[in-house]
Figure 1 (tube, chains in turn purple, brown):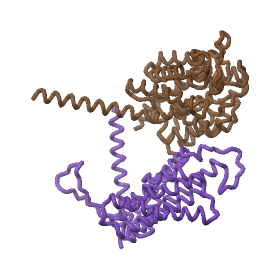
Figure 2 (cartoon, rainbow over the protein chains, first blue to last red):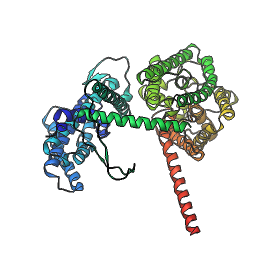
Figure 3 (tube, each protein chain N blue to C red):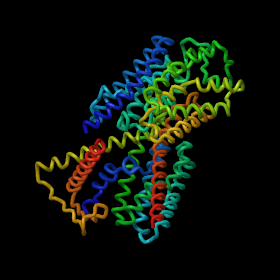
Figure 4 (tube, each protein chain N blue to C red):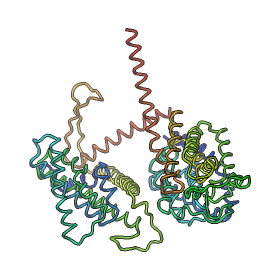
Amino acid sequence: MDKNYSLSSMMRTGAFRFNPVLVQCVALCPVVAATQNLKDAFFIALAVFAHILVSSFAASLMLRKVSRPVRVAVYLILGLLLICPVLWLIEFKTLINLSFTMRVFLPLVAINSATAVHCETFAVKNDVRTAVYDALAAGTGIGIVMIICGALREIIGSGSILGRTLNFKFTLPAMAMPAGCLVLLGFGAAALQAFTAKRTAEKPARKETSAQPEEIELEVDGDFEPEQVDLDLTIENDDEYAYLLSSVNELIDSFTNKDEEGDEE
Amino acid sequence: MADARNGQTAKSTKIYGDYLLMLAAPCALSIWYYGAAALRTLAVCVLTAFVCDFVAGIIVNKQYYAADLSGICTGIIIAMMLPADVPVYIGMTAVSFAILAAKIPFGGGMRTPFVPAAAGFAFAAVCFKEQIFTYGSGRAFMKSVSLGSSLVSGNTVRLTASNFLDILTGNIYGPMGTTCVIAMLGCVVFLVIRRRQSLIPSAGFLGACLLVSLIFPRSEGSVISCAIMELCSGSLLFAAVFMLTNPATMPVHRANKVVYGVFTGIVCMTMRKLGAFEEPVCFAVLIANAFSPLLDMLTDRARIIVSTRQKAREVKANG
């Protein structure tokens, strides 16, 4: 198996560096609408995790040769088959009291965009184990964001955690509303981007002291046409990836600086 | 890069310097009417704005420029829209949200897509509705009732010379610095001299508000009295002068500026009639801000399509 598709590497990239919610901006609806408190956030995260895992497994195992419209319908049916019985079990066979929001949004998890994106862009193009790893990473990434958002919104918005009052002098009910969650997600995305940028900038600098990674050759087919370039890149390991990313960032920065200077003129 | 930044700061200083000059009148009047309470609220908001700006600058690795007056301006605008005796933490929360969530993440100064003061006030209004719309101490001609709340309950005021003068001078219950009509008219005159173009959205906004209040009066008395009360109540005039004239958030094209103002006015009056808040002008401004770039984009596309068709026609005609 390819080294880049190891579980740890995929967890690092899928759950953190390219977090589905904070970077790819998918599954925003359940995060914003259904994570008003920690308990709801936990259940919704669990549902999303299970749905994405089962759908990715099925997509990779059985749906490769099926046309895309049929595949998307299958994801929906799979989601409903998975979530409706669980919802019924929770409501009628346990003592867990689900809120009204959860009763609305839990079945809607069956049509969340994260599942469709991950199944369509990854699972149907890769083997079962890789697809399951990707689903685990994506589900973990979404779950972590949901649980953090749920906890923060409950603490700041209602002054309680898991229903227990924390006796704050004042609370900010706006944070328990969807707008407040979007603000939190914005700050979360900024923090993640800053963290990733710092890590990416640090890696090539550390390499300078040891062995430099080999230069990556960009093979350009035919005459150089900036809009029609076919790049053939083979990235062997994480270090090469980081080096390439930092080079591209530098290139983009240089262009941006030129643009700004041009604007000024 | 440095020159560009200096250019931005100079532009920001010029525009927000004008705003600070204009804000001097409402500030002085609020201190005259409400005394130490107004001064305390004002000081808290300005200090919070300065601290948030400074700290956020450190966090995002951006040097703080004292000449960039946008933060201070935001602090004063929010203070003017609050009741004089509002608890300190409410002013601090509103200003912190304005600076940290609506200004700094977008680059600050002339780059903000939303008016930070409107965002801060809207956030505080959602969080502390009771405290924000309950007006306490000060001179008043109606006991504990602002013009906005009497309109909400469907009452109107019979306009006599004395109470009309009270409305003009701001001697009524309401936010501490937004009720004086004469001060607002003075600010409009200042803007006419300094930046005439920026008043286009305000004209559209006030025109739309006047029209809606004449067609759908909220009280059963005289339609004219009701329209005057609508225009003079709450922060409507204040928002027209200090929020809709913000060059960072208004559209570029002149026709779009009118549409932007009219849209804000219609949304504001609809929310006043049907919404849960006594003064929803900040929400209306934020909604209009969201559509402002779209208006310009649509206009630009329409212009490109028209010019392309014209060129195609010319080419066809020339053979």
